Length: 278
Image (tube, rainbow, N blue to C red; front, side, top):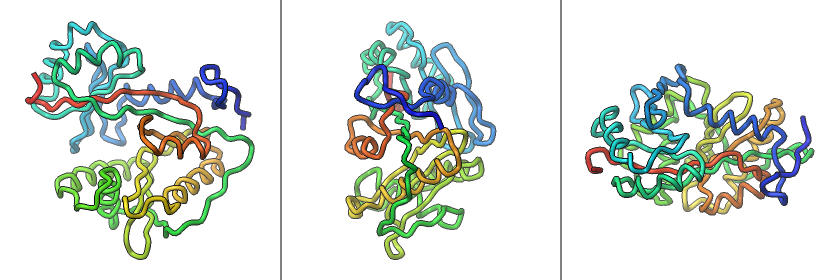
């Protein structure tokens, strides 16, 4: 494994030796079809429009800025492609986001949480799986509902039972991912599902779900899950482990302490509510 080097943009931080390759890899995720996931991507005038068949997944990825004066034409194109359905819009890179943010607001879209992709940088000490209070089990079709309910409660930070429709929608996406190489774990305390983690396999591993229910936070359960995946990543000889987080949220500091210090990629997030936006 190559040694880490000092980041050019953040000299106080280490950079992954394959930093530039990882940037290109993450970017490619949003412009290519993934038949195993049922994901279809259409290149249109304003960006890349994607959907996953038989799910509510609908995303638009804007990799290059357009003239902000064309925002109404963009919204019209979104309506033409998706109809009156809600769509997540991602602006790739802070320069693109800065140029388009006011126009998207004026078009009636709502700002969401930004996405920051961090790569773990190995300093030469093999990571080890840490023990903790959770009993960890793999996710199968039989316990998938526990995964989705725990994820939704953890993301919301509330213990109210999530809307049944939201649970079914999340389960539909997770079923597709399970069949396409996604891997998921649940941590239980007693018989109760309290935390989850999910990732995609490839030359790199990408963690896209990590959540702990509010009453079970600060007990080391998320660290237990993450350290297990991290140790396994290096044991299998993977190039890197990536994680996606909100740069303004508390967990980003937790991830940095564990070695996720190289900032690979950034996306702004917007929500278009379909017919509610003009």
